[in-house]
Length: 211
Image 1: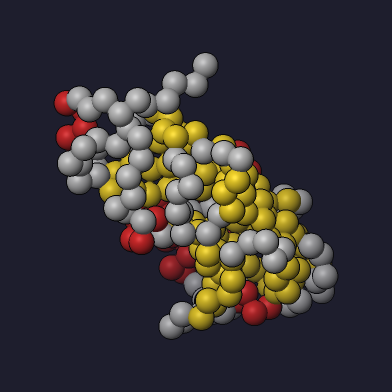
Image 2: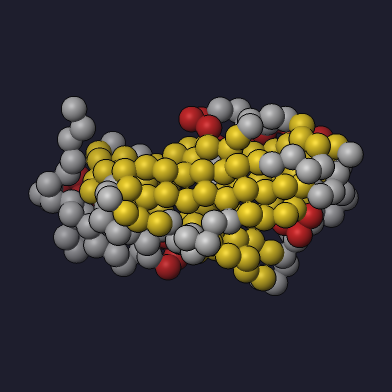
């Protein structure tokens, strides 16, 4: 039985620095190597009763704004290519508000989940057009843009932030070791120190694309 917080506040409220909602994501097929022209599908579907990794409780989040963002980096070059998404054809159904966004160093996809019938959903497909070693990540900007949203069970007057953890492929390895294949040593350091806090939490997935 899933117990949903009913909004009561207790002394534990003051100990919460941030609610961290766990969002499931699936990347398929989950391969370590793709060919140019292959289709990779990323989906995230979950009910509006969402698990919080901080309090270990479930909260009902009705029509919540998560502000998802997807980034693709190429890490097989000596300098990380933040605009690597341009080396993929991106397919997104018109029913989704998830569109390309140009930022200072590259390109990403940003928008919102669809919410209907007590369920959140997001899906997009990417087709590689260039060979290389790539690092896909999907995360949210909830902590920045949606931090003031209220929900049933949130501690009153709490200064706790809001954030998410993208649990990709049910917590699989997701080829994190490929970070060590990059000639850029900063990715080796990233592998050693930020595997959980950045790669796993932000839905990281590494893969090769071959000719």
